[in-house]
Picture (cartoon, rainbow, N blue to C red):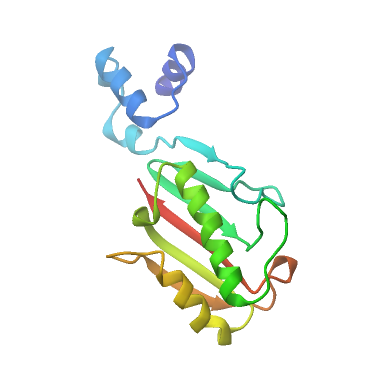
Length: 165
């Protein structure tokens, strides 16, 4: 409770590092034990017009404690609102949308630690995988791929990612 009181009375912080530095320099750190620091969650919405906007009550991405959680990206061209035909073109568009959101968060595909690929049919896996693989150099992230009954807007592919800053 004291921690929240100090935070509310002193200053609003955008980044955990700023918060921690402030408390250290003001000698307030003695009032906070390490367990309290571990429970701090600094949450920030990430948004860009270079990827399609959310079509529901969610964010394109959320940054929390140095991790970036990117919502599933449908293959919608943000400039036209159109979805390309075929798995290859749709995977390419989803990856471009993910790249735009990663960049808005100050990340690249090198920061991605986990991805999940949703496919309208597992027979699309090979085509999706060929496009997906072009975006990663060196160590690839952990990944899961699933066939689902149906994707929003009748898409053939949707991809979500988690990145570490």
